[in-house]
Image 1: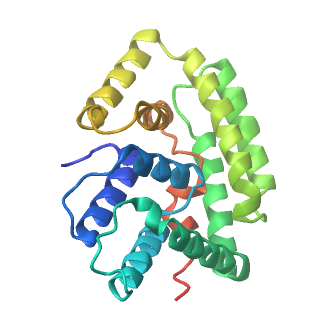
Image 2 (image 1 turned 60 degrees about the vertical axis):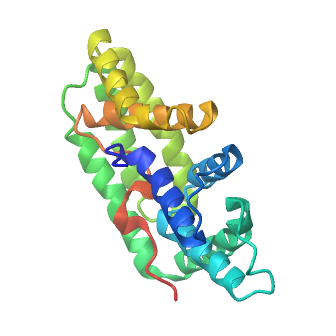
Length: 226
C-alpha cells in the first residue's frame, strides 16, 4: 500500500517491518497500533524503533522459543526502550547533535519570519515565536522538544482561526482521503491522532511552514551510535 501522508508513513513503516521480519502475513492488532502511537507521541525516530524491533526479533531467532512465532509487537517493546536509551545517551554526549538542534531551531525561526499569507494574529505569533526560537538555539533536544510541541499547537490555533472555512475544510478532506485505507484497520483513537497531526502539517504547509518538531528534521537525529 502506498501512503502519501507523512504522518501515517511512520505507522506503516513499522507495520511493514515487523510483519515482514517476523515471517507472518498477519496484520497488527489494536494493541500493536496503540503501542506505535505511544512511540510516536514520545517522538522516538523511526530508525530507532526499527532497530529495537530488529534486535528483539534477532534475539528471538536465537532463543529456545524460536519455534514459536512472535505474536505481538509488544514482544519488541523492551528492545525499543533499550534502543531509545542508547540514542538519548548519544544525543547527550554528541556535539554534532547539539549543532544539528541549533541549526534546526534557526531554520524554524527563518521559516516563521518568511511565512506567507498570515493575518494580524498569525503574524504576531510567528514573529514572537521566531524570536523565542533564536533565544533557545543553545539548548538540547530534550529541553526544546516539549516546548516546541506547545508552541506549535498555539501557532496552529492562530492560523486556523484566520483561515477561510472552505480552505480549512478542503485540507481536512485531503487528510481523510489520504487516511481512508487505514479506516478499517486502525483503532479510532490512533487514526484520530494521525488525522490531527496530518491536518496540523497541512495548515502549516499552507503558510510555507514545516512541523515545528525536531522529530521531523532529519538532521535533528543523533548520528548512529553503533
